[in-house]
Length: 262
Length: 240
Image 1 (spheres, one colour):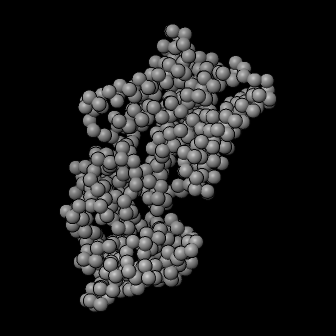
Image 2 (tube, rainbow over the protein chains, first blue to last red):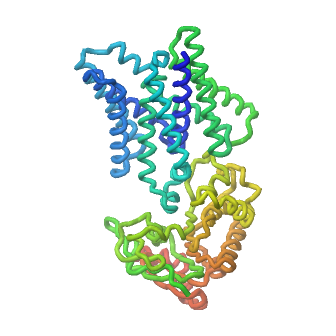
Image 3 (cartoon, rainbow over the protein chains, first blue to last red):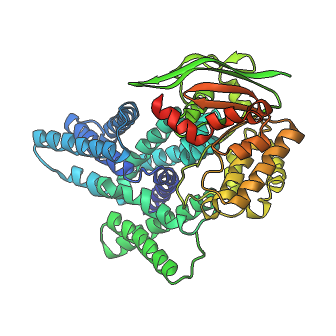
C-alpha cells in the first residue's frame, strides 16, 4: 500500500505537469493515443517474453515521434494524427494478442492498471523518472511555456520549437507508459487532462495553475487508492472518478458564481 | 548612420504565384520605416522572411551585415509584435508571465516592472492575458518584445482590431521608443495617415517595391499618394 501511494503520487505529479502542456497545445488526447500505441508494445513484450513495459516504452516513444514528424511534414491536423496513432496501436496489439492465444490476466492489468501490485523496482524507476523529468521541465521551463503559448513568437525569440515539441512528445511517451501501472491504458488520458482542465478554472498564472493541478491529481490518486483498498474496488476507476468529482464540483462552483472570472 | 538591414532581390514564390518579387531596400539604425500595401501585398511574407520563419526565398537578407541564412544571432537584437497573436483565451498566463517569456536572462527581472510602467500596464501585471482588451494585449506584447532591449522592433499591422484610443496611445509609445531610445522600427500598416505622422521612411509594397524613401518625398507628392493609396493599390493588384 505504501509503495502504491508513493508511486501514485509521483505519477500524479508527472501526469499533471506534462498534461498541462499537452492540454494547452490542444493535444488533450495525445496521452490517450500514446497509451493505445503502448498497448501494441505491451502485447509485443508479452509475446516475446520480455518485460512488457520496456517494449511499451520503445513502441510508444518511437510511434509518437514518427507521427509528430509526419504531422509536421505533411500538414496533417493534430486530431487526425492522434486518431492514426491511437487506432494503429490498438490494431497491432489486437493482432499480436490474437496470434499469442488471446487475452490473459497480464493484459488486463495493463489495460486497467495494477498500482497495488507495484514492485519496489518499479517504484524506484517511477521516482527516478519523476526526478529526471521534473528537472528537465524546470531547466527548459521558459522554452516549454513560450512554445506552448505561441510557436511563431517562440521561434522568433530563438527557441528551437521543433526540438522542444519532440521533447514534449518524448516525455509524454515516457510518462504514459510509466503511468499505465496506475490507471492502465484505457484511463491514462484522464490523469493528463481532467486535473488540468479543472485547475485552469482556478489558477491565474502558469506556475499557480500547474501547482493546483498537481494538488488535484495527487488528491485524486491518494483518495482513489485508499478508497479502492478499503472497499475492494478497482483503483483506476476510483482515481478517475475522484478527478471527475473535483471537475464537477468546480463546474458547480463556477456556475453558482462563486469562482472569480478566469 | 549604421546600416542594419539590407534586403536584396528578395523573391518568394509559391506554386502558381509570386508573393514577393525582387524586393530590395535597406534600413539604417534609428529609422522609423512604415511599410504600406493592401491585403495580399506580401507584407507578412516579407516579415516572415526577415524573421527566419520563411526560409524558402531567393535573394539575400542581411541584418548587421550578416546573411540571416548563415546565422540566427541577429534575432537577439529583434523584438517582434505580430498582427494578432493567436492563443487560448483561458491560457493560464498573467501579464507578468507573458512579458517574462521574452526574457533571455533571469537576471533581468527588474526590467519587467520598468517596462510595464513605461507602457502603462503595470497595474495589469497579475491579470490573465485573455482577460485584457485587444489594445492592452498589444501593449503586453510590445513589453515582451522590449524586455531584452532590442535594437529593432518589427510590428506586423499591430493595431488591427483595436479601438482608436488604444491606437493613439500605441503610436505615442512607438514614437517615444524611436525618438528617445533610438530603437529602429519597421512597421506595416494600412493607415496612410498614421504612417505620414510617425514614419520618417516609407516603403510601398505590392509584391514588388514601388517606392522606398523618405516620408516627405512620398507624402508631398499627391500623385504618388493617390496612386498608392489603398483603393488604388487594390485595383492595381487585381490588374497585376
